[in-house]
Each structure stands twice: as C-alpha cells, then as structure tokens.
Length: 457
Image 1 (cartoon, rainbow, N blue to C red):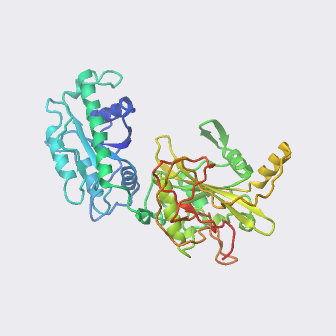
Image 2 (cartoon, helix red, strand yellow):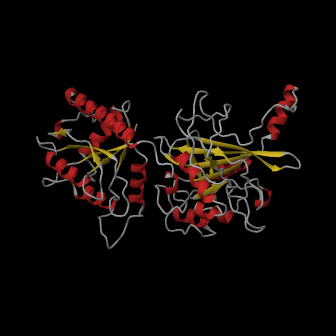
Image 3 (cartoon, rainbow, N blue to C red):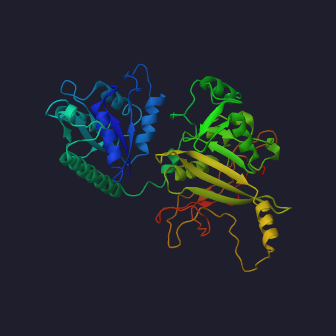
C-alpha cells in the first residue's frame, strides 16, 4: 500500500519528522510511506495565488497518487502549526486532493500530553467543508516526552510504543482498504481528468521557460545550468559525459521518446529528420504539452488521455502495437508505451519506443535456418496489447470512437506532430505472449490497429 507522510513542522531538527521517518523505515513491510516536506510551501494568501507553484503541485500529485495520508503534528499554543494549516489551505482552495482521502493523524511533543490538543485541532481542519478528508476516527498516537523517546540511531526505545504504533498502522491500512472497497471501482470516465496541457507542476518541471518556445531545450538548459558536452554525469551503473550519453542514445536502433508525469514532451533521441522517422518528431516540439504535440482530430486527445491514465493508475504497465508503415513492401514496426516509475514506485511518465523489428526476425531466421510460412487458419492480431494472466477475464474499458491516435500522423506535409499513441477501445484484446502483466481484474483497453506513427491524413 502506498502512503504519503506529511510532517507539520518545518524545523530543521524536528521530532515529528524523526517519528515519520522511523515509521517509513521500521514498518516498510506494512506500507510504503513516502515522507514529504512542506518547508517550501508559501504562506496562504488569496491575493497571491500560488496554487500552481511547484511546491503545492508536488504535494497535490503525491497525495492523489497515494492510497492514504499520515499527518504528524507538533503542538503550538494548543493548535497545529501555522505551516501545516497554510498547506491545507492551499490544498483546499482551488484544488482538493485531500477530499475523500483516508488520513491518519499522529503527533509528538516535548511534554506528557503528546500533541493531543493539536491533533484535535488538525482533525477539525481536515473534516471542514472544502477539505473533506476522511480522518480515521477513534484512534490516537500521542508520543509525549519526545526528547527521551529516541536512541542515538533515531529509533524508538520503548518496545511497547513500537508495537502500539505498528498496530495503529496495520489498522489504518485495513481501514484504507475497506474505504476503497466501499468507494467501488474507478468511474469509467475518470480518464477524462487527464490534463494534456501540462498546466501543473512536478518536482522536475523547469519553470521560467515557455513550453511553446522553439528554443526550449537551449533555454531550459541555461536556466538549470545543465551539464553539457564533456561534463560528467553520475548514473546508477556508470559515469558518462553528456556527449557519451547522447552518442549512446542515438546509436540505439529505435526511436525513444520521454513524456513526463505532467504530460510534457521533454525528450527524444532524434538522429534523423522527421520525414525519415517512423514516429515523426521535430526539435521545436520538445517542451510542448501533449495537447500541442498531438493534433486534436478524430478524438485523438480522448485516446491519449485514456492510454496515459491507464498507465498512470497502474491498470496496465505496457502497451504494444505492431503497425504497418509500408504496406506495399510489408514494412512493420512495433510501438511500445511503457509507464516509468522512480525508486519509490511513483509514476514518472511514459516512454515510447518505436522499433523496426524485421532485422531482428531476419537475423533469427538466418541463425536458426527457419522460415516464415503462411498459416491460412491463423487469425492475425495486428493490435497486440500488453498481456494479462491466462485465467484473467478483463472487464471492458470505456468505449471511444476508433481513430488514428498517432501523434506523428500529419495534418499536412509541413505540419507533422510528434510521438504516436495507441488508442484503447471498448473491448479488450489479450495477447498471451506479451510480457507486461496487470491485475487479474484490471480492464485492458484494446489497441486501435489503425493507429499509425507515420500515415498521413
């Protein structure tokens, strides 16, 4: 279960932060707890709307993508902190990520009462109209005399306290599960809320550069003082210069695209002009929101929203589409649309890989001495999607009109939008050979076999 922990203190040395970090480390077998900071959230002021600021939007996205929230509050003059109150104001002013979100309130203080009055104050705030959080009733965790509660490794000393905290967290996860079951399945049209305009912010959003600026890459690099040329970059499994990374990516025999979790198109490994690419992309498109990258023709935006929402929510990790790009010469490519996640499991965007798979097949046939032959009885599935388990019975996904959702499907000879995206339709198709797996009861949108990375309108 994915939970986020919000610490109500912005102090550099906070016992409530120690408590939250201890929970995240000690009870990782119960839940995955991501500890968030509110130190960069501005003071609430209606005259200076900061709803779209990076700090507020970061909290919004993290809360929305979590199953529940834990809030740890100190006690300041019998109430919660001004910083936490201000944060909740931003999260209930124009956006409402805490609405119907399960919340567990805990707290620590210097004295014996353990932030009891602050917790009561925080509960009333969270249950106020406009916030509408679902605070777990009848349970408190009050850590008093906190200066003596931790050892030198920031672990709680008292094992009875540890057990009580563990039991409370287990009870909260059960409560979250029950609330989720009562809420029922996600609304069939939930995908409509997918924002293709990239109007929000993430922790990696580059501010101060207009998304439609044709020099977005150069200006974004200058803004962030990005490494360039012979500068070294430390990666998970190596140290490379920027030049080496570019050489490596451009040498991969596939077209790669990166769209971040804010639905902003931020990278492709361009090595050919758009006219010679399967999925046509241009340098001036980098930085654009998907609403501008994809032409809004034949319900393309609806299809794109469905695919991204399905990947974002984890209903499916991978879409695969084999499509003809040259029917006369029987030329086919494979489009892969893969959800990306960080080390904590958070959705971090979508990568698209477009690959001409015939050279691989040809090499395999040459090595094994086998041949491809026609099977008159075979019903070819040209829209193979990510697989489900053999005994899965997926329920139908929202129906949308069939259309070519390729972002690279051009409107005219000189207007060729960027990355292609397959379109889900009403009836799921199961490819038992594909490698991606999803839950047994997850709906799998079928790939629209007419979607093309290179076909003109």
